[in-house]
Structure formats: structure tokens, C-alpha cells
Length: 434
DNA sequence: TCTGGGGTCCTAGGACCC
DNA sequence: TCTGGGGTCCTAGGACCC
Image (cartoon, rainbow, N blue to C red; front, top):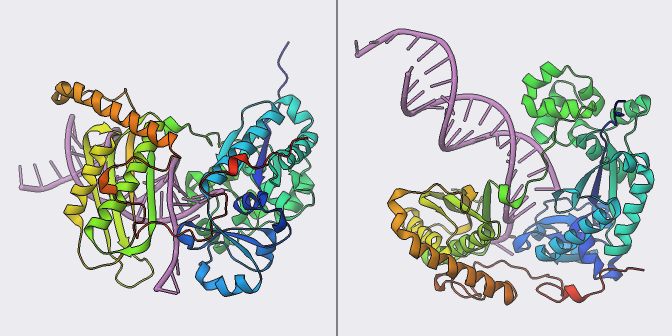
């Protein structure tokens, strides 16, 4: 007896206009009306409902430029509210898992892959429709679903589901003729993994559609677009080469916290407050994941849209990898003393932690054997700090004095936060279970 | 006046060693 | 002091993703 071979199949679920759809959950009156969501500091547009897209609002458009237009057309405008979006995202993922009966591969805040088992694959059309309906009913988020024999094909199918078919579900199946016709109709830069640069490169040599690309010679593509382009090509031909789309929190390689400042900063003291706050946030993430960082980079810069862009950067390596806020804040102060220059108005800054390792797997350093007692005290302090902050709204109630008050001028502008911003939305009737 | 934030992977080139 | 090739490791920068 030999096992039957089942070709792999994948389903991709992607929430439509995710952030805009999240805001709509609490504002049913906005159904069918144009909605946009702005980036941090209300800087530019990062999500648009279909109606807003139809009005010609582009992704990444600076808000100040379209503000009069948005007002004239009664477009609903929201500041981004990521804690809300993360929560809705969890609900969507949980719902999907409950329908398919297995763990999904969450790829981003608003999409996930489901590798299909033979029994799911046998009924994939029904499964997809059930998923779409259940997510709509339980979380009130509309989704599109693509199905294919590789993850890249499932992504492409989802593009078709969104743009070209009614019902928002599409399966790139086995019919070669249908696939040919479909591929001939899709620009090559819509493929997952072909971005702006590679798309332009391909067009310059006459490869314009997905069909042109799929027909290209694979050795030539490998030389022309490196191995990543080769992987994409093979995936489009139905050979799965991309497997690693999820990474556990403990496998992360870096943590970045960076922001534009609400108002430009001139003084070193304000920069210390801002960057110390950023590094404190990064440390909380480290501790939540059970990680320590070996290196830290901090930077701050003037507006990238002005003349004479000034950018300052400073790097340090810790004697021992750490996740201790006090140690990091100390380094921030040291770094700013080293590279701060008076004069420019700084518009944004950030902190990057890398060389991450699991706490407890850090190689010992003989120089520090006598520090164990102090280490234990410091760890205990961090645990208490995290616990208090979790208990009191998670909003950094307890923090180092150097971080300054909450009204600091560099804090984000969020003038259009929906009423469900800080707390309270947990109690709202999100789930419309029958 | 006003222009997001957070990730990963690959490659080329330099440093260093044998 | 110079000659030479091959290997590894690290870093900066580019490209991609959402």
C-alpha cells in the first residue's frame, strides 16, 4: 500500500480595507460612505474604503493636501488606532481558526494563510464561503479569499478575488487555459514579491504581464532578479518554495520603535525624553517575548522633505545583552551627549534593538559573575514595573522620570481618534453572534 | 505650517585569516 | 617587501512586504 499524494493547496484570507473596516464596525452609519484612516501624527492616508478609493484618494497621500477635498466630500477621517486594529485582528484570526479547525499562518495584521488538509481542499469552495460569511457575522469585517497551489498563487488569486470577480472568492485551479487568459490580464508588478523596482526592470525588457513572466527562462531570471525573483517565478508555476511566513515572537531579529514628533524638537533634553520613551516601549516588547538585545542604535533627523537633511545616528553594543529599561535609558543619554548637534529642528527619531537572544541563553561573561545579585534585583524591578503598567491601562503609568510628562510637545498628534480609542471598545457589541 | 511605522532577506564589498 | 587565491564573517544599503 502506498500513501496517496495530495498536491499542496493554500487559502489566503485578506481583510478588505482593514483599518477603514475596523472604524466602521462602531459606525454603521458609515456603511457605503467614504472612510479614510491616517498614519501616526495624522500625516498621510494609510487606509481607504472602496468609496474613498473611487473618489481618487491615493494611498500615502499627505492629508494636508486633500483636507479641503475630504471636507467638501464629507469623507469620514480617523486617526489610526492600532490597539483597536490589533484586537479586531485577533478576533478575525480566532474566527478563521474555529472554521477551519487548525492554526493559521498569520502573515500580517489583516491577512493569513491556511495550508489546506486534503479534506478541507476537497470542499474548498464551501470552506471559503463559510469563512467569508462567518467572519462577517462574528466580527463584521469583509474579507477576500484566494486559493492556489502555492502561497504566491493564493495571493494572486486574492488580488483577482478583490478586483475582478463578484463574491470576493477566487480559486486559481487546474485549468491551464483559464490560467493563461487570467495571467495575460494581470500586470507583473501585482505579483507578491515583485515590487516597484523589479516591476520596472521587467517592463524594460518587455515583460509586462504575469504570463510574460511565467514564460521566462528561470536561469535568466535568477541572474536578472536574484534568487528571490527565481522563487517567485517557481511559485507562480506551482512549485512551493516559500514556506516561512510566520515567525514566533521569540524568533524576532530586531525591534524598532520610531516616530515622527508631533512638533519639531530642538533641544537635547526633549530628544532624551522622546528617545527614552521609545526605548522603554522597546524594552517592554523585549521582556514580553523573553528576549534580550545585544545592540542598540538610535537616530534622529530633520524633516526629509526640507533642504539640508540632518541625520544623526549612534550605535552601542552592550557588555551583556539586556532588556533592562534603566540600562537602555542610560545609553540613550550617553548616545545623545555624543552626537547631538544644536541648530536643526528634528522631525523624527527612533531606536533599533538587534542581536536579539533568548533571555537565559546568553553566554556568560566572566567579568560579570559578581553581578548576579544586582541582576536579580533589577529583573524584579522590571517585573513589577510591567505588572503595574498592565494593570493601569497599559499606558506607562509608572515610568522613569527622565521620560517626562504626557503633554510633551513631541507626542503624536491624533486629532481624529474614534471615541473608542483608549478603552471601552471591549464592551461594545462587536460580535453579532446568532 | 502639514509627508507612517515596523519588519525580513539578499548582495556587494571590505576585513581578516590561512 | 611582494606575490596570490580561497574562505568566512561582518556591515551597509537596497528591495520587498504590510
